[in-house]
Image (tube, rainbow, N blue to C red; front, top):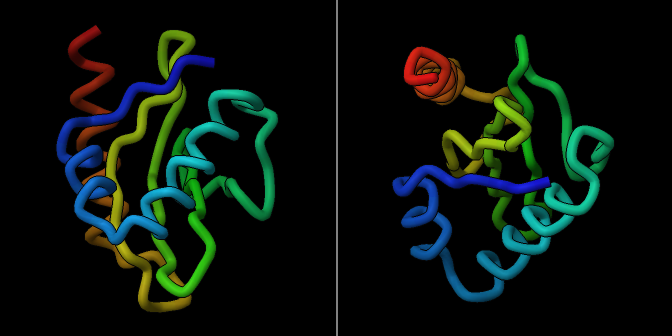
Length: 104
């Protein structure tokens, strides 16, 4: 499956330390390979058509993504510091998902 990454997310990943960004890119590679079949511990559904790609390690990086028009779209990235995903992170991803769908 082809994966498209929003530019701000690409910049977020590239600004991480080398080891962490390598782990994140490994997760993205798994998403490309397995698509909608990717599951725990790398992926988890977190909302209506919204999924969390989990970069596991010392720094818990999360990428929020959706599926649209046969692509996986990575909408938002953040460092998770709490057990629950902060609402502001979900709201931002939902907004980008909505904008993505209204553009098609």
